Length: 68
Image (cartoon, rainbow, N blue to C red):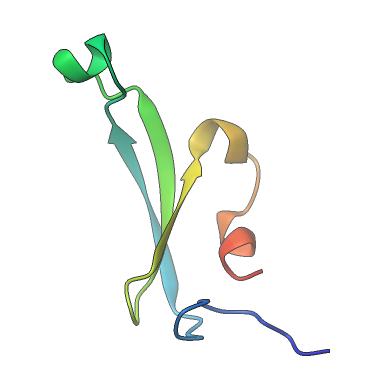
């Protein structure tokens, strides 16, 4: 069986992550309340990115999700 680790677009294993916050809808958007927090894992080679909800992925290694 083939090992499919790495970026799903280019196959690179050079990735990084950063935390971002975003507004939601309704009043939080109107008042620019950034209450949605995500960890973004991105490929340094091609820029492919995946967003992970920080609340549901806390304690998990997001690199494991990105690289399979």
